Image (cartoon, rainbow, N blue to C red; front, side, top):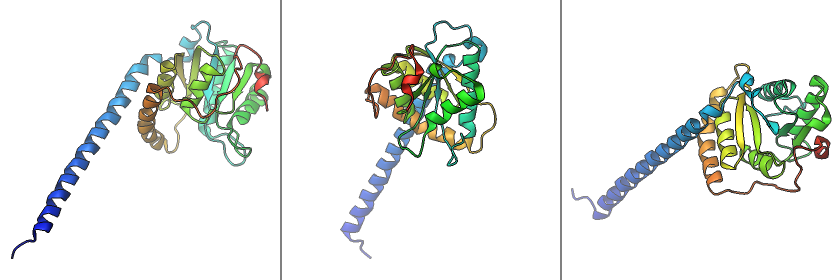
Length: 233
């Protein structure tokens, strides 16, 4: 039985298409993993202990990155640990200022005021020492705004282990001398999912820094050396 020429052509085109798609997928995977290994390798020596952080001089601020806030207004476990680790550094005299950067894009969702209220009420941190970045919608935005809005040149970043390499890489590429202290104080449910999300997120932010993309919001300069009450809303 003769096979129609059009069918043979279709099979050939389909085979070529599958091969091309597989090659593209393999190449994309190699690039994705390559960027991830590069970012981790470049930032590994910037992740330090709290004791080593105490020996650093002229730290402009301790940057605590936001995380989820529950519907009842209480912080997630990750955010609670970031606050505990970051405020502990403040209490040890690592820096006289804390910058809390998170998502406050709507009236009904507010990471930064949640963070500041905990610092005020649970840790008795003076309000003037706490700056809130209400437009820290992403790690990239938080780092960009720390540099351009808050004029921070030398910082300690506090977040969980899986997040530190990306945050440190972005900061370094934007011209900030940054060090990271881990806030991984316990085991977290679904941590594997966070680890998985970081793979494409690191690649995304690699290209964001490569092209120096503007953040979602900029605005008026508020030097971190001043009064944190200027960021109250």
